[in-house]
Length: 110
Image 1: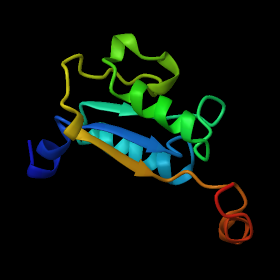
Image 2: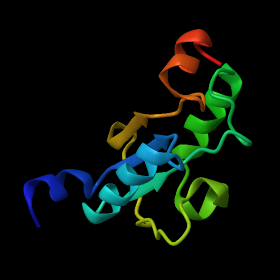
Image 3: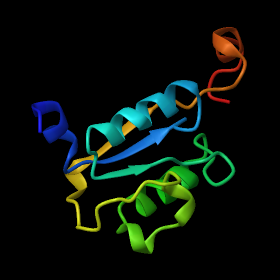
């Protein structure tokens, strides 16, 4: 196991936008690098401009895999069932409005 694989082996990683073009690539790389746990919040469950939804996402992210909503775990991924310390949570924020850079500049935080 390489150093970079070792880094991810005890990490729970939340990838916002994980179902998108860049996010799905990152998710595959995290699986290849043996991330202990990967979570992909979907917009239909978590509106990331709503503080309550963000708090719920963070709370649910800290639950053991068997106790959290199934929609957070990528299909076909089997997270480690051991408990991870909260300091091992990594958030990679890739969520964006669909429509390219111009749409994001015209509609920030939407």
